[in-house]
Length: 137
Image (cartoon, rainbow, N blue to C red; front, side):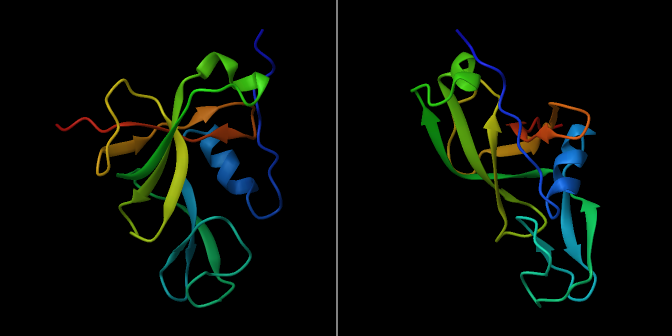
């Protein structure tokens, strides 16, 4: 029997991230002082330690850096997904930012696989980040 879905609990720093996902966007903190992107959310820039951070949308594209395939049910809310693949994605805007999410694709995962963000609404204020394979056009 599947349990209730797992919904993240935003804190004061991460709430805009989760809300943007619920609205279908991938927003990250961007420093007005040095221009670096910061993730995960925090009150100061991870580059210059400045406090001038704004939430801006990113393209939501990148490459799979690492992954793990889960075959065991660790939480009732994930039972219907097993087996599922969690990927760590190096975003195109800044190569030292790696963002985790669920890979929603039937393609075989490999390092360098091109993906794009596919946010999913869980509640009005919280979304989750899924990644799907990028279609070349």
